[in-house]
Length: 234
Image 1 (spheres, helix red, strand yellow):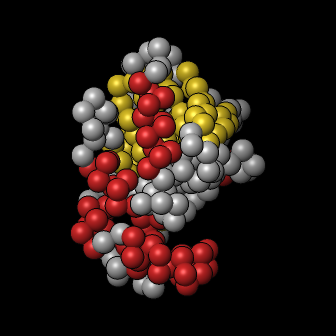
Image 2 (image 1 turned 120 degrees about the vertical axis):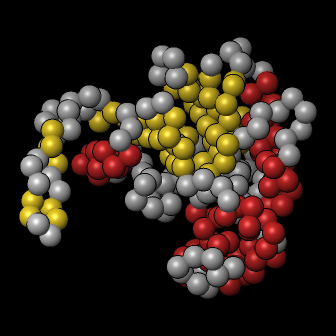
């Protein structure tokens, strides 16, 4: 049993097709496909990608999809989030980018995106775009170890798969001593020992951001083995 985990299609249907074809070529069968957000973006035909995700072709895996940064910007544009007028999107891509995203994802598709999950908890793994803190939480190998520990403890997961950074990486955190406390209005509770079990954060790559090259991750939950894959396409 292998999982394929990817993020960041960003409307690039050719890149997504290349990844699906690569999955068919794997020696060990891929049984589950997880897409950790950023299905839409400014890279191609957003609605064609969403149609493909909703109605896979014969023989393709039925993807499990959660929302990412670009989906949250769609919600903001349509007044379905706490940040109207998409200030994050405006700061990132300017007025022309805002208009392009508005025109490329209809209200009906925004409704479908709103019905997707925030993340998935499978076995001892959390699969999510950013982290439980925020869809925009960008974890990388340069993120301070204490912050990575915090995200893993919040998730109560031994492996946190994330896609926000667009990078492929495997970062292990092995605390020698870690205790946490919770402060409430009634005072501070007894410290809790978090244990010394090694945990890790895995960046799953980005499918559609880099023209001509897609990256994604294969995971074997039987032995915890991670394999990063790169697929060239035209």
